[in-house]
Image (cartoon, rainbow, N blue to C red; front, side, top):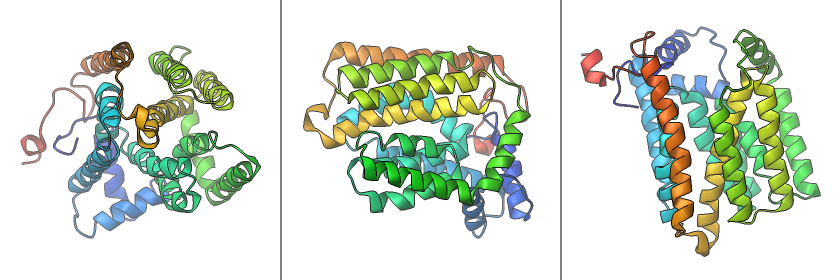
Length: 303
């Protein structure tokens, strides 16, 4: 949160990373994020201000993406806000910004405007490589031979450009403790529930249904032995939420969710994850350099 002080598990880490980028040191993050930090450092020399500028940018993109229809406001209020808002603005700033920029690429891909999708797609991947997952998933709806070729070329270009960085990321994830089978189980449950909603309410194709379910299962399997699987699970969960929003932009009958039982179920999904997040915040009370709690505003800590 751009008004928060030293709040959020990774806030202190990001301030350190930004400080090292300003000093010209190697930090092992994607090129796009480095470029963004150096661009902002022209105006601000303090890592605290630069990080708050990035979180404010995330806040603005959130508003732009989820304020266009009543359905998008519903999905943001009931699902995106309780599940991702704190994460994108207080913890996972890089992948949060990356996923949001990738949303523009997804919208263009669903509108069959592939040329316009190139810039936001590559920009998002340059900020955090995990956004490639949701970009590739967006091609499934309009799957055809030339789309498959385009996707393969995109992956090939990405692997060629980021081969060294991907190896660094791979060995970095090996240093994390592998999560157990139940890590992120709640998000997996929400992901499967959203896939079923897309299938039964929004009538996605059999192919898209199969790919989405298979992806969730595959990422759960990866999570059992690699921390990277949890990041992939978060990527597909965000994609599923934004997938519902895209229906409201393209089809008038989905402009607003009127089924009260569906709204209550979506609220229930968001509420479950929100309670889980509060549990984690409380368990980490005053732990680390920038814990979630106690919460401080920026002027209470730095001034």
